[in-house]
Length: 223
Image (cartoon, rainbow, N blue to C red; front, top):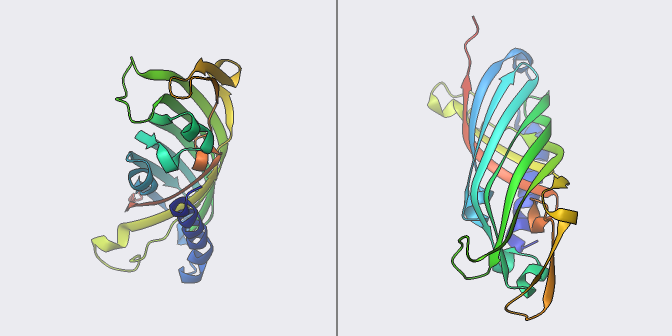
């Protein structure tokens, strides 16, 4: 885990824990209907990629769909083993949905099935079919803890919908299309037979995923 990743993990957890101190106690949220559109900050800052998330809130239930594209990990953002093999990891997509329950207006927990495509290349080379070492898909199933902070909630203008959502998630890999969850090949840089194993989708290719997303919350008018 890099210092930047560690700092973001601490920030996300701290935001979730401190949101109740700045929230106004109210009960109307238990019967509200909303649509949220959010964009992750971790993906463009640390992986040169993009992530969008949509939420539908119905009373205390929350449903989400998220999709990330073109995530790159190499050099210091890769593991020691991958750096030793001069291997870079590219995720052309990572996608899935979640179903959750709102514990508080500012806090919800979700069950999340997710699918991920991993492509491995030699670091520094053009990433195409000819230079690809291996590619495979994984399926993860885990839990996520999400905060929801609207800093201008009580404003009577468009600022009221601005939303900040820190999250801490645990997404262990359940299955993979990589046979026996590993791949052995002849590495052209080390000139040795090397082994690659199935990677998890989180920090340092572990199951731990942290993020801070920003976006907008739209109220759905009741009939």
